[in-house]
Length: 115
Length: 114
Image (cartoon, rainbow over all chains, first blue to last red; front, side):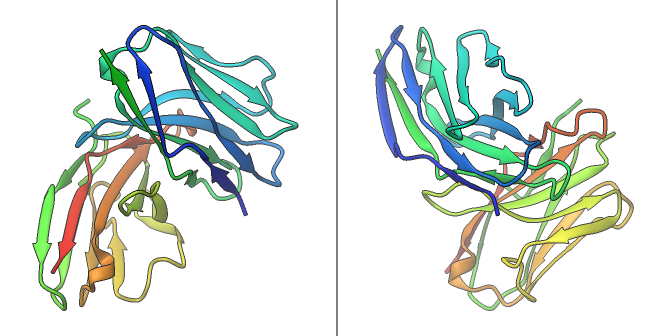
């Protein structure tokens, strides 16, 4: 069974600064996807960034980048130049597309960006 | 593309009552998923459909829960004889066969059982 662990329940950062959210996972599969989803207060979940396990290169999307360490089963999210609109819950998730096609989520990290 | 929609957005019900939620996926998406999110937790998988076929159900989905997607378009999730432990946010997501790794989420239905 797959598990996803987020050990930081809450984080805070000042606007324009950089923050890193941690995630570890466990899976017996060799082919899988990892995701970071953002859930703003009272708004729907949106995909921030995706990483295919077979790709060694870390994914980047504008101010968002990941540090994917496959051997360590670690998948952290770095947010650069933090903005007030980044305030949200952030969920790390794992997808075993070929066997179960369901997302397994961590418990989330609440990020507060201060002006 | 109007996104995934869910109705109602909020539902308050008394223990023992039945409730039904509706999810309308993005129009060309063939897979539809239901997740449940309790306070302070990440979403947990409940079930998913490919077109009208229900392909997998979580053990979290007790006999009181039933989901349908009768014509392969919208889906309903019914909870019979609700219990206080059913209070949660129920999330629907859908995806296209063209992008199998990307699930688009709806805004959710928040259920409160009193």
